[in-house]
Image (tube, rainbow, N blue to C red; front, side, top):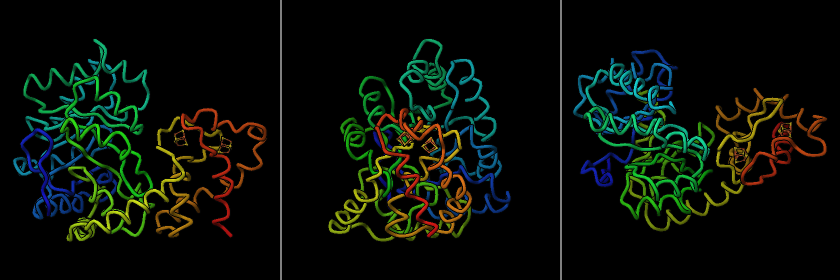
Length: 338
Ligand code: SF4
Ligand code: SF4
């Protein structure tokens, strides 16, 4: 396992981090085994969130007795001071620890939300107070709009940012990662498989691994998945391979969707998933999870073309800050079914 200097923290973080979001979906003994196996293998960064069902409790029950072996990152999705304060205290209890290494303000995608967070009655003040009290060591932020995150970290005091970086979403490379690197901030990349769409898995892991980030959190639920992710990182990425991966990421990212979720569809078509998987589907086909997604939403995808209110002007496209042609991509996606 490769270790990297984690910003200004003095901590040497493992290049692979354990994303604990999906642990609530598997039997407790399996989750416990996966977490302990990851620590045994030298993974020393665990990421969760108050919002991930009982993920924090699973961590508390499974590895609290090994607390000195990992850097613990969680998130508060609350926006107000009072609610965030309460949630941070609850996270400490659930994870059976007296300190959280990193509290991240979770899923901040709108300017107005950010202003609320940073205001006198906002969650940021709760995070600062927790830091002053020794309950938290660092404050970070997560979101799906890399250019907004780049602006915010230039003006406000954050230690870390968690952002998407994968073969289908390379957008953090443009502004955000250079801005973070310039300030020597902690850089954590998430969703290397973009929720299960990207294949082959070794390329999916090796792309963010080759970039200027400190750790990549991959959502894992079993010992087999920990092994698979670690295997992809066994060899360092040479310059030529890095270039190839970057070229591939440019192709697979041509859809330009950031997953900001500003758009919504009256037919409940999961627009960002279709957008993000569109190029991968064409080039590599889909993994069973991706195929399952398309089969599940088949009828909805077909109904987009006949949906009367979107005939003249697609409702979803009015909301996209990047002015993307979502209706065309959705309608074209039905070619997957032959
Ligand atoms: S164009 Fe299609 S995807 Fe967009 S809102 Fe209308 S029905 Fe939904
Ligand atoms: S299609 Fe546009 S609005 Fe919808 S998630 Fe992607 S970038 Fe955001």
